Image (cartoon, rainbow, N blue to C red; front, side):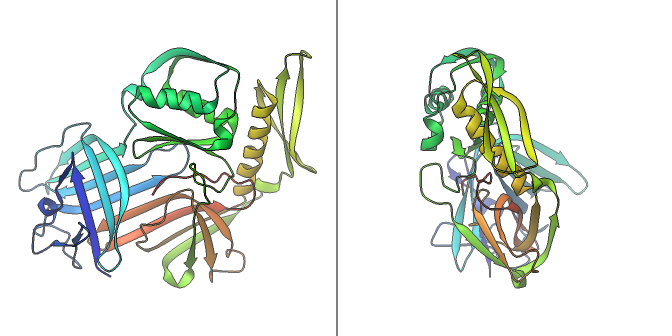
Length: 355
């Protein structure tokens, strides 16, 4: 399999600049084929590129390492980077849009590294703001914030219809507020590809509807793997409290049955919020009972939030999981993928990371 890549900076295809002919042969799909061993000094500026796709609150990222013995101008902060990775035989997959937030030059030898974060993670979205939301749905709130930052919003229907009551954002960034809002309504939130994404924790669906894909991974295709089990998921039920204004007292909702029972310390404003949080917490506790990771030949179609079925590893390892992060790396060793997973199952914190 011959690795292939395509890289665009502010709308300009710079692949040929990083992988000049004959080292990067154009593909009909727009990518450039990378024959084995061409990445490295004297063979084109690109030394490596790494794309990290995370679920939930963690920001996706893209990092490039370049041979800078011949002068390469530093990229402007906030420049837009778009990346595709794959193979000549199967084509390249779109990995996302990222905004450059820093660069570093060092020697010897002279190397420049460029770091970029998911498009949407701007200075303004991290700046403190003060505003209030009263009796607005989650969908209304997320769309309002997205519009202020020139982003689009993708909100799962069940989550979007929840009305958390009155919410105050006091000297708090939109990024932190959205993270807090997601926690209150049992959602996963992330910024990816110029979108604010809110998905129901444990839904196993894409925010726009439809089931997230499940990939199959066999032990024979891995260079190495690891799996750890723990007792973290031993809780049989979860309780969360909400304040009943009409009665003037605290009431509890329960997800699951039996003991031991985990009790959330937060007090929610509505029964709807408490139920969503109890379900999400039960799933999160269950997921932690088994974690799995593996390295293998690049599979750039895999993304955080998708399902994974592991087969042929070990009777205690073979199971269904949710991908929590997928790291795709192209360097002089070729194109590889590293995934980190948690045990899947009903009620788990399955979210979409884009891909």
